[in-house]
Image 1 (cartoon, rainbow, N blue to C red):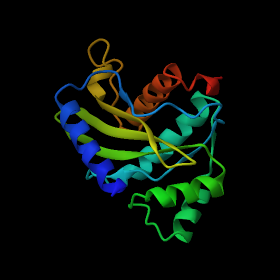
Image 2 (image 1 turned 90 degrees about the vertical axis):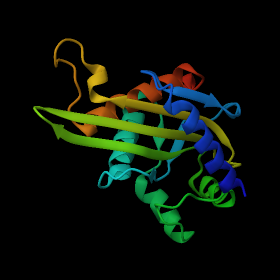
Image 3 (image 1 turned 90 degrees about the horizontal axis):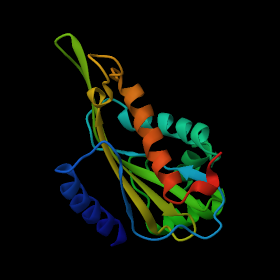
Image 4 (image 1 turned 120 degrees about the horizontal axis):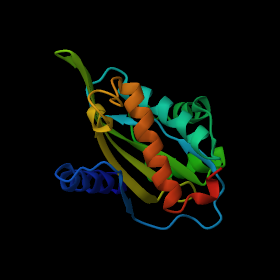
Length: 198
């Protein structure tokens, strides 16, 4: 039931946001962050709704790396998360239930989870230039209850970073994922996760 509600909420949020995408990520706060949370977080495998080969894995690795380097987060190793997925018979392409989230949170000893969806990921050649585009929805969950706390929508194209002529333009999907990850993490720190700032 709750899994279905998250999908419906994400669909309506996506419909509202597609028409008004901007240069900055959009953050919706469903609930406040837990008081005095630790900076130990687990990044759950992202759901891939695009058609870029292994796009969710690519964004997962880039986002986790930026999370560690941009702030004082202790990110649980990917292997530990995947081991628990295996024990609970959850496929990485499957979203865990509320009860499974609670179990994962207690076994990993985390107060916050990060999960999300890759809605669109494009890297293709168009004439003499490379077109890159990425659309993601990231969610922040309470590790003890599995409750959705924050949801962030972000959509950018490589050309959005162009300064003059072609300078500043991001020509690889990895570079675009890195820039967008930094923007999302910086927004989270500004909006209340500042106790994890370096």
